[in-house]
Image (cartoon, rainbow, N blue to C red; front, top):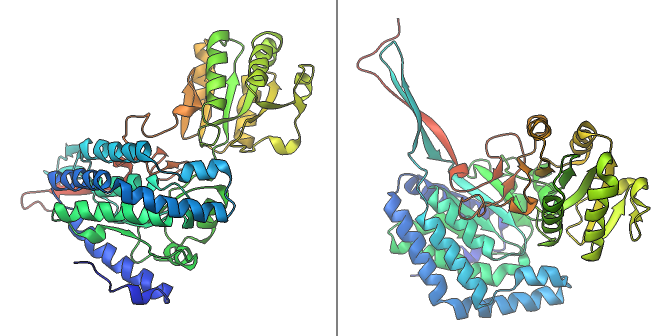
Length: 427
């Protein structure tokens, strides 16, 4: 039976959100100790529901596409929003992949004995209620919902207004899966309004939401970081650098830089700035810059790169800029320390890479930078939970606390200590 009790709350956003929060908190208490098999069953049943209802999902998505076009979304944004049968199939595969993952809840992280006779265990435990605020991509509804269920957390999903209809059906499918496994359907709830006031409300629900995860552009994440009264896992931007060391292998440099920039320009792991060691400026550096230009990339270079035909002059504002487009900033540096200094000044602690054969240079790069992900001779486009073998990810965190890098099911847990004695007292 459907529950219509919060339809009359739509006009009263604070009451609507308080109701959703209270339901999520109650559901999280039950889900926290659900058997791993029950959570796996819920996600498998949700995957079946998504596939069974694919024509309904695609129909709902068509309404979203009309809304998006009327709103004047760019072609790239409309592409992110669009669902067809192939993309629905990918959502189903994502749900099954998370279902098949190892359950992190209750895992013993470490244990030890004390001379006093105490036995101490540190075990993984769910965070509680997670609020996910995201922009247009409807697949985030399924990914985020699945990861939260897997890790024993209730989730409140607030998708972008563009994906309102398709996200609604996907959230329904997740609830259908929970019911099939006799788990509380309120463990996955979607905010049933496009009203932006719901977002502001979520950011202050410290009594019912344990952590907020924003996924989207700089505007959204900045708003969340400024206004949240709840802890946030966030990355503001993916300003990814690639440094070509004097010891770089020319073929690796070419392959990696081209892939890191051009494979998909709109993702947070796309390279935005190329740093070239002065000693290889006329050889590898020039070759890589020419290859980027040939591939249709606009290269905004420092003064010593302007001799290469097609390079335009970089402005000060090009350093530390996230283009998410076929544009890259490029700069010549005197040595590895100048590269490190540039990245520390202009980077966003997301993902930075070094192309080098010199082990000492790689060790220095890995040791002295504090980005969430550091790479050696590999494309920054690998900055992704799926590529890390975590199944889906809810986002990439660049803060210092708790989760860093791709946030999968395991990163959506905290831990507690279980201490056992035998009538043991402290002397």
